[in-house]
Image (cartoon, rainbow over all chains, first blue to last red; front, top):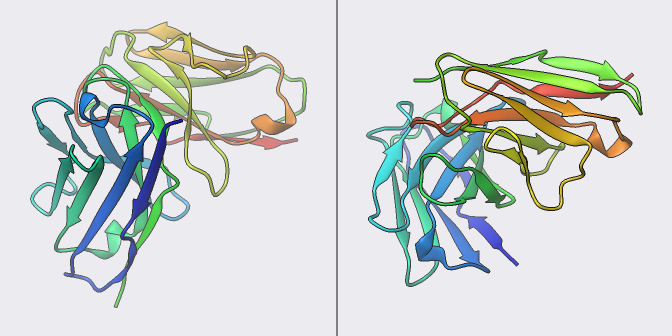
Length: 121
Length: 107
């Protein structure tokens, strides 16, 4: 059974940093691209970032480019999102999601339960 | 970036109704279109991938169609558990983008 378990969310001040983790199990982690998708309170879904399974290529939404860094440790079956220079508009539930194959041309077939990030003074 | 526009943004329907939700892409995305269902307080759940393929375990009352720029999600006979918000998403190119969502409410 595929499981994705996010952690690391919490309250942080504007300009601060936070590191999210997503522990994966139930599939060959290194074979699949992974992604972060967020949802601001009462709003729709917004793709944040993705990372390839094979070559580790990374992709970002313009809204987080230069501030967020996605990475993965295939030996630990864990996905990360390092978030720096956080802004109030980054407040959201952050979901870890598995892609069916590569980053493009596929779909999010499994999602974690999400972790809440609140950016406020 | 490819913009995804869903309509309507919300609808009210009764159990047993046929419901259709549309999604339009700002440029051709071939069949790289996926649909998700999200219930309050829960993560999204994949319903349809590649425009018309039903995800394993999803009831057959859900179906998808379309290609190019225009797509539809149809629920043939709405059930109580189908009241939720539905999102389309394109995977043709990055940035991956979602539609704004369609909230299906009980009439």
